[in-house]
Structure formats: structure tokens, C-alpha cells
Amino acid sequence: MKICVLPGDGIGPEIMAEAVRVLKALGLGFEMEEALLGGCAVDATGSPYPEATQKLALAADAVLLGAVGGPKWDNNPREQRPERGLLGIRKHLGLFANLRPAILYPELANASTLKPEVVAGLDILIVRELTGDIYFGQPRGIEVRDGERCGFNTMIYSESEIRRILRVAFDAARKRSRKVCSVDKMNVLECTQLWRDVAIETGREYPDVELSHMLVDNAAMQLVKNPKQFDVMVTGNMFGDILSDEASMLTGSIGMLPSASLDANNKGLYEPSHGSAPDIAGKGVANPLATILSVAMMLRYTFANEPAAVRIENAVKKVLAQGLRTGDIFEPGMNKVGTRAMGDAVLAAL
Image 1 (cartoon, rainbow, N blue to C red):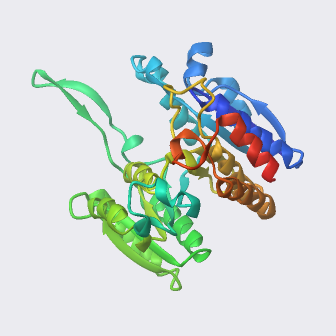
Image 2 (cartoon, helix red, strand yellow):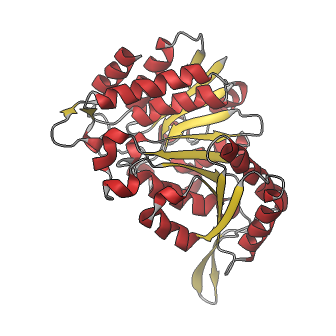
Image 3 (tube, rainbow, N blue to C red):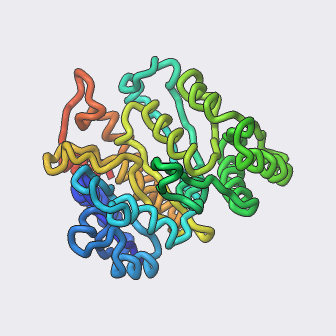
């Protein structure tokens, strides 16, 4: 069982080090090999997703990623920006289904910016289509029209792309509370009218799952107003990008949330939902829990090792119950710790 480890940029190497320590502590015999992705890959090779990384990622059973990006590379040509590496590996590996849980641990109820009674017990799974939509549609570009610059992108989805991500959402709902909310903008966008039509058709294959529909602007409002009404939310690439970040902050910190990006055979890329946080890189204060919980998702979805996944999740819960907090989730009366100390605590809890 081989894992491709991509520490990435910013705080990526720091949080990845703790996740790898936890994975090794489980003694499951994984072979792990590191490679470059993102800004560090641009600096070393000129490409955000170099050929050596492509070969390793393709050969591995799963990919564990830290974070990519930072202002250092903002002025690079578009093809040499770190984010192109992330988009590239998703496309290259066919990772079309992004699973982003938004779970509020009871110990962090006061860390959310919303009232505790609004978010207490929150447990949402956002299923985002990852390889289509406006991020990949053609034609795209910037050109001169009538003497001025015009930018254009194409939002496009095929019926088969929509149906396969909906089935991921319905299958996930069957293991939860059997509710799926499909998010679109069918009152304006024909592309998402097709999305709703296919959602209704696919829903007939799952009579045991309750299907509802919501326009994306209302969904954004409802996530703040009454988030516990949702169980599984499924939507396209752009809407999912925005809504999953919004949902993550309901839990108090994006530093707590893992994610999985899967292909049709459950080979996956696992990464924290947060970015590279270059402002705190190298200071030893980043929260490694999202990356550690991403390891749990990897064990659950790619390697089908539910007991090991639960061990990690229980260890994280125990550490939080002990009052240990990194700066992003700190509140008065708790014990503030750094990246390494938090990793030590999870290892001890295991």
C-alpha cells in the first residue's frame, strides 16, 4: 500500500509532518514517498505539477496533500501558479468527487461565530463535483473585443458528469440521515437547469432518500441561518467551492476540517480544507488536526479501514476534551499549544 505524500507550500510541511507521525504510529505498513506540488515545485522544476510527481501520484494507492499556494507566486504566468498543480492532479487522477464534512465538535461550540444553539451538533457533508463546470470549461480566456479587454469562461456539464456526482451524494446519504439537498441556480443558468433535471431523475433510483432542491444564493443564507437543516449537500464545482468554505467556518475554524477527493474506484487525494497560510508558516503554530483527520478519511474511503479511522477521530476528540487548542481555536481557559505539541497529544491519545 503506497501513499504519495505532497507537503506543498506554506504551513504544508509542518502539518504534514504531524499527519505522517500519526499514520506511522498506527503501524499499518504503508510505504510513503514524498514529491513536489505547487509553488515549491515551480521553484524547483518550473512546473506546479512536474512529471516525477505525476508518475508517483498515478502509481500510488492514495495521495496525502498539505497545502499549496502563496503570494510569492501570484505574479507568475497562469500555467506556473501553484493552484494549477492542484487542478492538474485532480484532472490527471480523475478525482471528480470532493467530500467535505463540516462537523462541530462539542468542545468547540463557543469557537464558532454563530450562537452555540445554532451550530451545536452540526454534521453536514458537502459533496462537490470537482473536474467540470466553469473551472475547466472551454472556451476560456481574455481577449480584446471592440477595443477593450474581455474575460470569458464557460460553465458546462454533461448529463453523465452530473449523474455520477449525484450518485456519490445519494450513496453517502444512505449511510447518514438519508437527506440530500441539491444546490443549483436553475432560475438563471441553463447548465444548472439540466443539473436539477438530472437530480430529479437520479433521485427516483433512491426512493429511501429524501431529495430537496435549493438555489445557491438561498443555500448560502440558510447555511448561516439554520445549518442543521442539512445532511448531505451536493452541487457543482464553483458553487461547492464557495459553500464548503462557508460551511467550514460554522465549525469555528477551517483548520479543523479534512477533505477527500475521490475517483470512481475510491482512490483519493486527501487534504485539509484550509490553505497554505504563509503568514504563519515556519512559526510552529498551525493547526495540524485537519490534516490528521484527512488521514482518517483516507483510511476510511481508500483503504476501507474503519477501525483505524475511528481511532484517529477518537484521539482528536480526546485531545480537544483535554482542553488543548492551537491559536485558531483558542479560547480563554484552554491550554494553547503549537503544531508539534498538538501532534504529540494526538499520538499520546492514540
